[in-house]
Image 1 (cartoon, rainbow, N blue to C red):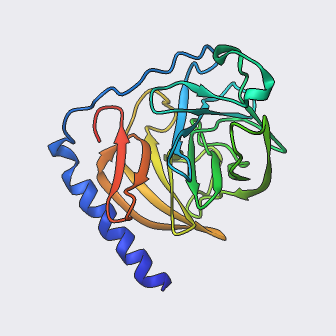
Image 2 (cartoon, helix red, strand yellow):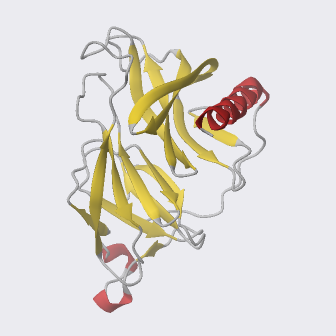
Length: 236
């Protein structure tokens, strides 16, 4: 099962990477997020029931999530009697926000990826595991676990090659996957072509690599798991 699953995922990854240059069609604006506390959203994932989205800010924020609807309106518990723009978000207890870069939801569980690693020197990367709360009923949730992320091919901190940053995390069949973002060593502002795909199942395992994608900033699977979409600064 493990071998066949890895092969299927590699095939999906390779097909996507091979078609990146053709583009993904027009992008349609369906809503606008205007909440003053959401200044730099770095992660977005659809809820388990499909009726709203979980989002979070990039580094510099506290450990919290916001729920938004398809138009970008923030959702909070009605019993707090706060206006939409006054709602401070759902606090995540037992968690710390160093550089949250991605979020994924699977079967009632939220995975918050604290994997931002611009300088390729962090040794405390990991993913918080949270039972998905009802955003209309509670004002906070608690991280039930923290899964450490340690790249098996990184030997130095900072790395000799800056290939260990990540902004793209997705979940398939309960297994977490990460896609890396590459930079020229010592240069945060200079991107390099290529990404690596890792599988996190107990320990992190390198699954595949591809030179046709530059600067992966997000990733998600289609509902049936047959298509993997990877976004970058300029393409999908």
